[in-house]
Image 1 (cartoon, helix red, strand yellow):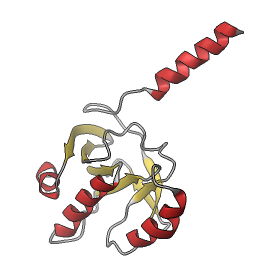
Image 2 (spheres, helix red, strand yellow; image 1 turned 90 degrees about the vertical axis):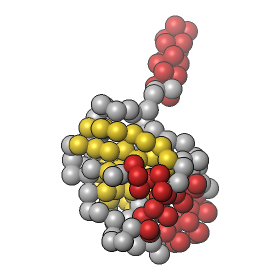
Image 3 (cartoon, one colour; image 1 turned 180 degrees about the vertical axis):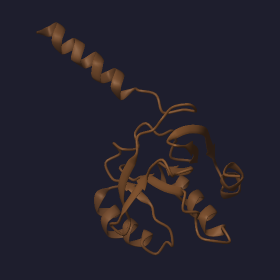
Length: 151
């Protein structure tokens, strides 16, 4: 019995420390609810996936999208891991504020869907995709760098 418990512990530890996705990997299609409670999907049509794990990354993405001369392209998706945010703050402050944005943000409120996506709380991640295959991953620390990365 002790051996079984030990084996299960090792297995779950390995899973929890799984590395993030990188260039050449395939991601699964993602379906999340956005700030307006609509479904946002990352699928084979998605060419650019913008991802933030923290507030700073979200600010970088917001600034970049708002600086575009036209609306965010239809083959781009923006998703955010907001699992670290207290649920009351998310529900009553952050999400209502996000409803003012002109673009959709797929919200991972539990952190499970986005757990393997690369990124940290201080940067934004730009993931270039081709049919859900990761072509390039770039972490950026400014809106200007983000816009350069999607060229």
